[in-house]
Length: 331
Image 1 (cartoon, rainbow, N blue to C red):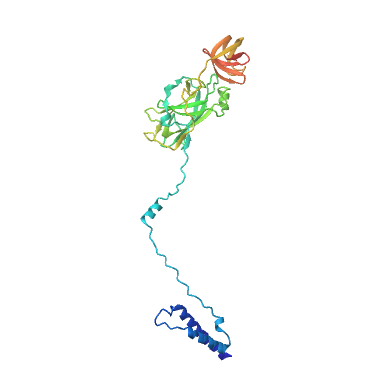
Image 2 (image 1 turned 45 degrees about the vertical axis):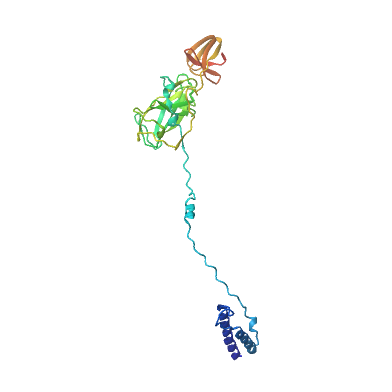
């Protein structure tokens, strides 16, 4: 039994060597000098079967030679292909949105003389500072290049409580900005006039929008609700800029619509009919307010400035004041 096992191992080794030679060799039918080992293989099979009683071919699987993968030829990118790669757009980060300001660009600024400036202070500029934290001192403020001038205050006629809808800003003889009047100011209503509860305002003026001149005095003006009149607000500021010229910049966007005298509400003369023998004109729309004038019965031509709480503020000739709607008719 031991002899038979050793003999089987020797024969199996010869068979494996034979198969390896057959696989690695080329086709003997076409190569001169090639030894055909197919007959030897058959004799070895019969020899193993004779001594072991087992069919060696049943355990062997003939395989075909696996062809080598084709070589891939490396090809350098052509000049056109490289140029195409260069033209591929590289994504860039989104640009920052423009800063919303109340100043006008240079092309929208216009001469302040288009308005009729009335020498009667009607409001105040409470705060003037820059976005970088600089605060005006003794009526002056140095503004760095690219900074923003921030202002806030109140506006309204202190004698009759005429509410202004807009505040304009001027420097170097030009109107350079506009903001609306709508913020609550109960302190002004208590100290100045009861009708000025919503007299607060604020504004942002880009330094790159403001013109340069010899006297750079920034002035705020309250705009009358009708007509061409504007009223100065106390608290003007002398500005000095780090750069001599206005910088053209697309970093700002004016959020306020342009306001000119032609675009302000026109003063339309109305008929005021007094149904009593005479009426008293008061400083505000309340019987407890001071009397500031009188108008006799009849029809008068005048201008209606405001109506609120059953009272009307109007001007007839040089008389201005509030009257109860119970005694007048406006046509």
